[in-house]
Image 1 (tube, rainbow, N blue to C red):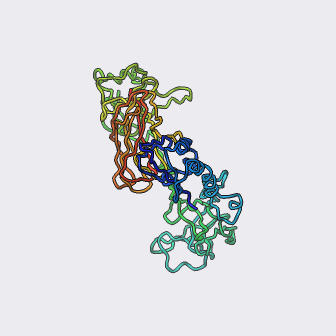
Image 2 (tube, helix red, strand yellow):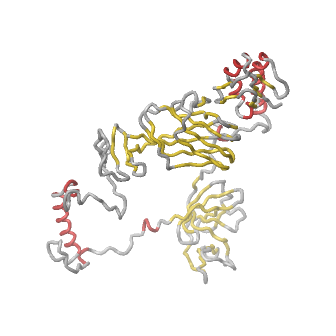
Image 3 (cartoon, rainbow, N blue to C red):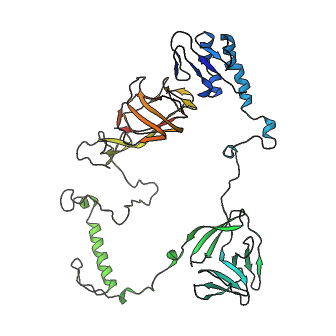
Length: 468
């Protein structure tokens, strides 16, 4: 039988239940089992005390209970409810009546990870003495008369050469697409492959390598991806000696008129050496005047700084005691108090690169309640996230289990004043990445959900950056 806990307030005044983050007006009632789990209800000492004191009345869905019976009902009946909602040892060891989610099984074997087998030459449409009658471009078959591979180019079968001993092919004419291996004379059936066995194909019809995995549910090899190794191993045209390549034209920055590539490279190397010996980063920065050369147009790829030494930092920024206030541009970076900061021109302030995500929420149906935060079932009205330094709210997102309409109010320091609000209107959720709300060190944040009707399983996520 379903466990029902209806709480009535006939005390003549409003009664607050801090354990649940709700206020119950005089003359109203609430079915706690619609909004809270049995462990929350049965574990609330505050609820029992106010029932015993006569401030609240417990109704079991049929009758109003006395103060003593009501206090026992939310305790003893809860124990029965616990046994009703958990599988017994017998059920867990039985015929599958009980269900255990796979993610909760410790040391469970993984599924879907392929087991790699030896490479395969081709996926052949058949191993036969007669060429297939209706081939498609890229099809390959093995001719048992000469044990050569033949590939269809759209108009004729092209000889791809003699099969070598230990060659392996996938035989598509076989009912389970078994792998056949060549022993130098005969092609031998290796039997059906196991599920998730993967192989590398030398050519699956387009002249390139490819990866395939076997699936026993339909006895086919499924393509994972093409792998083009040619670009890695192709050496390009034959290499010529530098003296064979003439260099023509006049180049004013070279010390002599170039005649061949080898001499030209030597000349360039000499000038580069001199330039490197007589140049510094500071000199490059000042090139053409104070600061004129400070911009790098990285239009040919990323700028990479690699020390080559594991114990040496590749880049060092001198920490600032106070962040810059002039010459500011979006994307400037600096370090203060050990925190990496970036200038946000949209919000006109320095913010930490590091971000914090504060999460508020409550299970089940909720309306006009403070949300819990990530320390268990503690409503944020009773406490909140305390900030260790000045901060700024930069985004807010909210989500529901099903479409609903509500307002997520962000409050601080036990004040009913909203510092920011995110609204959801007949939807699963919403978000705002343009939020710009300054907070101070030692402020503590709270979240209150306002709604005209119940919403289910609300979660509010606040993104903050440190404001330096």
